[in-house]
Image 1: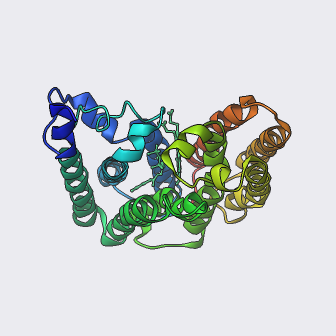
Image 2: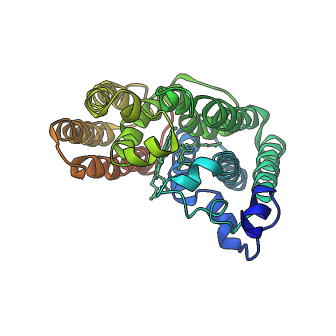
Length: 304
Ligand code: HEM
Ligand SMILES: CC(C)=CCC/C(C)=C/CC/C(C)=C/COP(=O)(O)OP(=O)(O)O
């Protein structure tokens, strides 16, 4: 082992860590969509929140989500080092020490939860804390390395942010926010398995039991199609509970059918092309659904 690798294994400060490396620990691209769905929960909830308190709530979701991403990168530094997609991350590449990353993630997790509780309300804080705990302990340290259902169950963590945003306004958990949870929960398997299909070699090498590694591509593809089909009525539900309007209903149905179309093409494919397209479309799909809900609410107004 070289001196530097030794230092990293011991968790000591790696030379040359920059602010950019710490920002990378927060998984900013993934978390931007997580935060957007949290903002949607806040905008769609009935009632009023002072814009400054609303901004604090969104900031706490962003910091809490990023912090849990940093702890995930700390725990997963061994498997991240052997996967092509993740090998250049700050810890495996030696730019940030393991202990330093853990301290950063834990500090920001505690801070974001406390600020949410003190400045916004303790229901939103409890949901934020639960989401962080779920992502770190249930998904990352528990299910990820043990079962191919890892992201089906663990994916619940990524589905909580709209409920947190909603609770920031109402102080409670109501049916519409549970539906937004359900929407992201059902979206996560086709989103992630599309990527896992074309990153199968990475996960096999790292020994992570993702669905395509364990059940094979054909079974994974069939399950992805099933999730996109079940998603159709659940994605329409926001209209029926009054948090989205007719434009949302029409556009989300069309987008949902396009998502089903992606899954059908993936099922028939003999190369990685359609899975790559489906992964990219999954992100656009979720972004557009929440943008439509927010947009229609801001233009038309009203509440659930
Ligand atoms: C357990 C559930 C999930 C898993 C396992 C998962 C996994 C992944 C992985 C491995 C990537 C590639 C990341 C990279 O290479 O940087 C990714 C990308 C992405 N994910 Fe997910 N994801 C999950 C849930 C979510 C949720 C809930 C959201 C947002 C609501 C989300 C949004 C995104 C976005 C926006 C990207 C693209 C990032 C980029 O541009 O590189 N994901 N996801
Ligand atoms: C508010 C709050 C705490 C939100 C958390 C949101 C959350 C759990 C999002 C999950 C998204 C995600 C990057 C999963 C990656 O799986 P992975 O960790 O297996 O991916 P990797 O291989 O890229 O590390």
